[in-house]
Image (cartoon, rainbow, N blue to C red; front, side, top):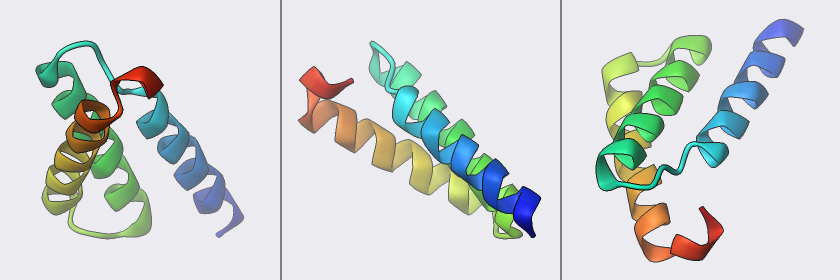
Length: 67
């Protein structure tokens, strides 16, 4: 359990750092992070990747100075 928490934290930090310069990079980085979090927590990996991709792209598009 303790190890899973650290993996989850590392994956979440990767998601924050994975903004990307183009929309494609933003989608890919978010999908990778979302899928990773879902895999670690035992969730649906495809669903996690989809949510991560959309969430990361939406954040980066609305806050370009923070990426």
